Image (tube, rainbow, N blue to C red; front, top):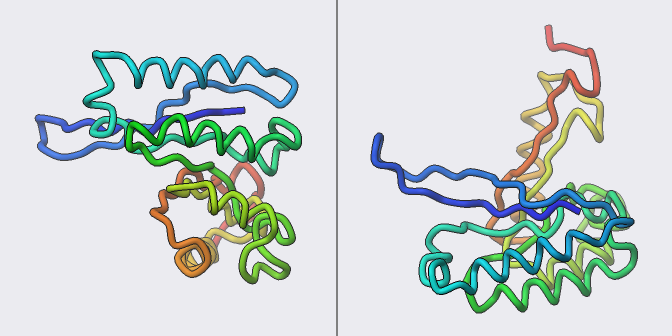
Length: 182
């Protein structure tokens, strides 16, 4: 499983806010050592040095990247999400998963209408969505069709999830197809 924190830093030159993804751990369902990483995150956030500033520096935490699609943590994933989120709640840092929700019958409903059973459980236990919007991976679209797909996915998230949403992954067309727009 991958647990990622999104850190925000105020930069002096030029003034502004930069968002940086920091990958904390990469583990699979067969390797439970990601639980040590989870404990480390809680430990750092709880430390006297970082507890007071954590909500201002850590934008949000992804509890898994494509955990549903990859079958991370077997059937216990949602319980682990609930536990992790309850442990992080005291720091006022939003928690969610990073996933492609266009998985009909699981994350989304049949024909991508509404939420599927797993999507409903994830939504009920999330503060933020880190969305994987991947036009080339799921639909094998041409580059000229990608923006339409991305726009429709953003509209779907707004209509069905209505949580703060960060697009955390888009696939590159060359990874999946060699079709290029004219």
